[in-house]
Length: 477
Image (cartoon, rainbow, N blue to C red):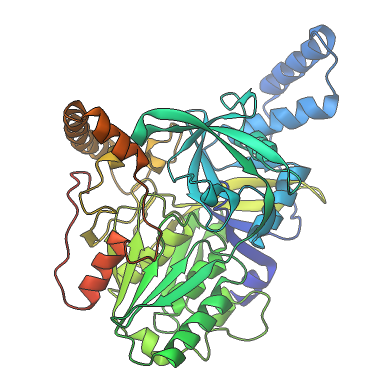
């Protein structure tokens, strides 16, 4: 196992897709496979026709690269061929520093979907929200672009501008937002101690520095206030990051050596188990970053906050802490991305990201398409979250991978009934709203995570201090 971790860097590509992936740092010998001659003849025929008859000459390399991208991209929402630019972007993202707008994205119905506007970035400052759909980039429609092409369009030199056309379904409107690109330096761990002696720890994404930064925040917080009564681990809008980060964050609150997550796939190399041990989460730092964290954090009452945009690595942490009954999960059901991708270098500057396994919680539960359900469902707003019915998750993706443990047909039927009931209630509410009510609804903004006005956080604090919790009004939960 130790040798496996020396050879592999395990990351979750939250910036683009929020799925667990294993990055093989060295090229591996490819197993021989028999190629279907009839289909190869078809490919050759189509290639020749394009070369001879297309309205303009097309470069051979572009044609073949696009063919490979199409072949891999048709497998599932998370497999992809990474060309030179894509591969470089992935390396930048895992280090927590890149140039762009500061949004974690996925795709929905051919559009770009905002998973998380990263805090303290141009996107967050402009008021973009999780769930927003981007329909145009400058004068170019997004529909028809691949996700990679959209990412390239949004990236650029710091100081340059781009205009996004935003579709916000919760407000039933589209509007333009002009952003100035900047170098994104993500601070993945934030901390705050409230007057009721509750420590709030927010992890925005799992990066190379997340585990040592968490260790430092936990240690400093205890030194400032040794009377901490409980911890709120906030994983809302966290779309993923480096898998070692998820293992290390879990290890900070669990006994040493317990299983955090396992992976299983077709090949023997995909069958792995990751435990709360330094060799399973240590990256560039020479020593165990968690070695000097106060022991109180192994037993102090713990709440984990999740929502529909908590994906992949966030779900690994939530699932492990829930299975061991170490934490109470509060909030909303998570996104449901439970597949493992392996990124293998094909050449010096290209790679193949391909789905190789599912991951499982310590109790052997697959969260693929289903997500982690909270122990206590809580809304983001005091009056409820009626627009949750418009939120889509992994299970809503057209070609998502199926969960092999559960029958999706029954789940989708029950889910659709609840969605229809919620939609009807939303329509009735909208029908009774005055123009003034609609204007107030559109002007309403969610409070900043970690503020005194953060309702979901206030309910977590109430739970930890023995006060009554106001549970979710949503039929979807």
